[in-house]
Structures are given as C-alpha cells and as structure tokens.
Length: 258
Image (cartoon, rainbow, N blue to C red; front, side, top):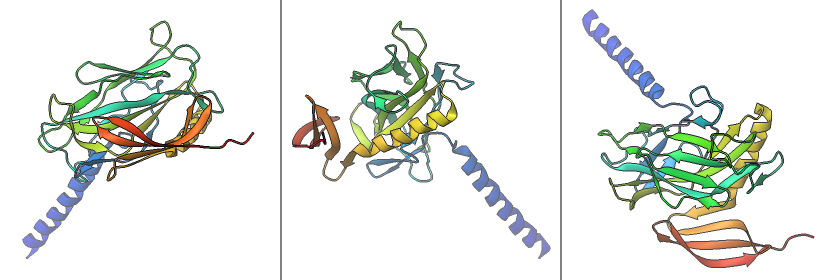
C-alpha cells in the first residue's frame, strides 16, 4: 500500500512540474498567437518594444518574439506564420500621434527569409513577411530583427515613440494565400530614448487609436471611424475582396466643430 501511495504522489508531483514548465515555455512579453478555425487570436493587441534594450543596442531590437500558444490552438505543421504590414509609421510628438517624423525616420523588419519590410510615414511595404515555419507540434517561437533608420539611411532615430501595425496570417509554404488570419492588427509602440513615464503616456494614446477601426470577419466589412481626405473627415466602410484588398462601399461625412 505504501508503494502505491508513493507512486501516486510522484505522479502528482510530475504533473505539477510539467504544468510549471509548460507555463514557463510561453515568454511573457512575446506576441502569443493561437488558431481557432480560420481565425488567429493573440494574447494582446499592443506591445511595447524598446530600441534601447541590451540585446539590440540603441537602434535595434528583436523583441517581442512570436511564440505560438499551442495549448490554446495549434497551427498546421509545415505552414508559415507571416504578417502583412498595415497603415503607416506614426510618431509621438509629446501630445499627439502624427504622420510626420523629425529626421526622415523609418522602421525596418527583416524577416526569416532576409526580406526587409519598411514602415514609413508615407505608408508601408506592399510585400508580406515570413516569421517562421510551424513545427511538428503546431508551434513556433521566433524573433525577427527590428531597426530604426534616419534620413541618412544610417541606424538612428530621434528621441520619441514610434508606432507601427501588422496583421498576422498563416499560409502554406511558399504561398501568400492565407489559410487563417487575425481579425485585427497588432500594434507595436517602440520607445526610442523616452523616460518611462513619458513613454507610457504615448502608449496610452496609442491604445486609444486602436479603437478607430473594426473588422468583422463574418461579413468581411472593415469600419473605420474617422478618415481625413481633402480636408474633410469621414466614417467609412470597406468590403474585403481577398488578398488584403478592400473596396469602399460607404462614406459618411463627419461634421467637425469650428
């Protein structure tokens, strides 16, 4: 009887140990996607990388990484996890997020294949990026290099915060056709030398910007609450046509107080 009790006790300890190790496998600061059907879900919508971290130096970082949460939903082994750059580079001037930078800055991400994806105030690269290949258990843990450059095409950037967005999707190998996709983009707010309290103010304002657009996967309709065109503000709706293309189906002018 004592031997059976001992074995049961050891089994219980092993379960606790395994659970602890599994939890530790997920890196707290990483982007942690999982798949449910054809939809990709993520542990958070906003992440706060720092160009001043020890690993990357003043103008580069490979944080956060991408760490699939297999327990919540594995991807298909052999497929590629990818991202599509969206929107434009924004700069925090201390009070507002604006589409202008002090010294021609841009942010570049080098993907797993060595392709460079650029984020500028004028827009983003049209090409998609490969994060990595899904392993045999449906997981992936990869880091990609993210750097900031100035107008002289040298590593460097004015002190401030920089905001970019990207949308995750999964494809078969060597194919850009999505088999699963996130319903909304991920926001990355980079700190480039700001004091922490000033950076957190920028992060808080960036979180408010995320509420400006909503994509409903069932209908394929993207609603953007406020868009400025030719000096006038509009609330617009766009229909997803596939392959990351949208068609404008509705635009309503938003009156602005004088």
